[in-house]
Image (tube, rainbow, N blue to C red):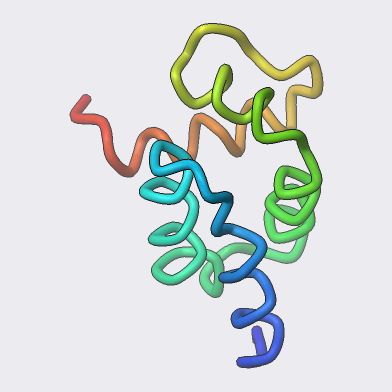
Length: 84
């Protein structure tokens, strides 16, 4: 179970000030984060520690994270918004 304090903190950490990232990360934390298992929650929190420039490259699919867990999380977030 995720408490409201954690969700609020993650909401603000998900707001990056770059529209391309905000439209992906904010809805994800609001709509999906609470349903993730603890391991995936940890991966999401690690993702938020990454530099905006790296996140932009990964989410725009111009490169991939070296860490396979981070790349899997990027893919999970992108799969929510991209038609298959």
